[in-house]
Length: 276
Image (tube, rainbow, N blue to C red; front, top):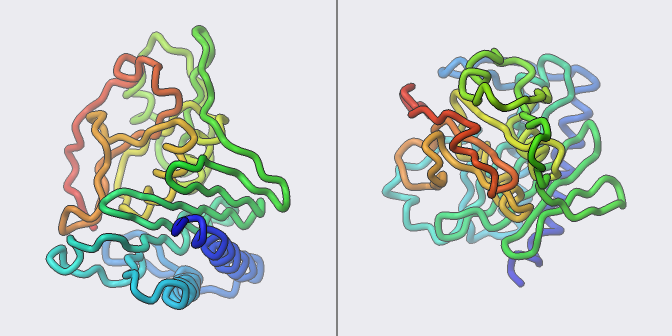
């Protein structure tokens, strides 16, 4: 009941922040900079961040917030939180700057170390993806709402892999079995590619390179409630708020769980250092 009461307010918050981002995107009224880790950030990210934090603080003043765009507390101060908000005010800043339109607002509620509510809003298409624990995963475009389910892949079908518009394709190709015929579906934003798997338009999304827990929190519950999984490069579940850094390892978003993924994907350990 607690989650269902929050959901509509969180959907509205994500939509309002996303529409504000869209206005800034269309007008070009933003400034782009580079963070210390060389990733991009814009004044639009920060404006959406402030808007979301204000809305969530009013909605649930007793629930702390972790955001990509704010200073992260030390683990000792946050490791025993029973629940907290985990947000990425704009997932896909690089796509925002590059003018592809493939960026989204991501808001998750994590309870006892696991995402329990997730909302993704894609302003370009006016699409909301959302889920709460135990109640299914949904796609809402304007007033049309459809329950999502991962694709039930049949033997002999092409395996559809969601890939980045910007990152090199060859490292992904190197992970896939040569016996499997694949089709690559390019899209920006980590969360939007994950939602392709949740709605059955892709069978898998392989992510190599730096991401944070805010990149997976909302889509984790959305994908799981649609029947899929998000796993690290050794096929183990991701974790939340258990390390000093909130960096993710390389991970995969998989659809139909019964497929022989260990044969289709040649898992390799993450060797890069985890950075925040």
